[in-house]
Image (cartoon, rainbow, N blue to C red; front, side, top):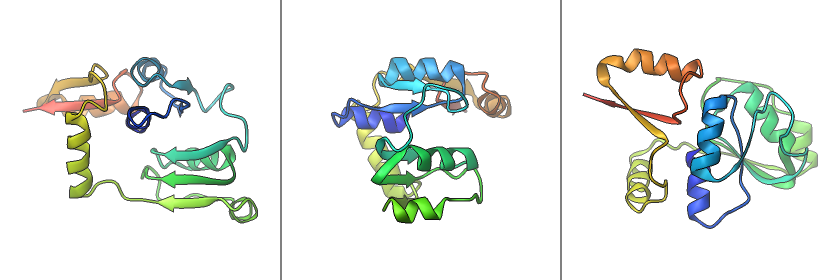
Length: 158
């Protein structure tokens, strides 16, 4: 969702987000004004149709979906770190001249940039962020993992 919100703040209007959690799909649709679909079913982008795909999850299935969706000559940006390894269709990558970029997004400079765009309002009204007490941290992560929250991000308060 953050990628969609940031792209929207830059003026990009044709954004599609894959989200498996139905609660978060509704949040993304409302907050990011993006087309949203469940990648496990129908309704996603056509094969070979996207100029740029950002894989913010980094799972085996999301890598495969990213490569399936990107068009020849397009770019897949990989920032998610969910799984250690997975198969990549290197033949398609090569023959379709797809650019695969891996980028680490957790540096101090990234944090400073994120705070700056947050302050500038790039992420909207933040109604899509949920706050919980730090003592509920374990339950919060379980809820995120098991799809029991509409929040894209949870903030734990001491």
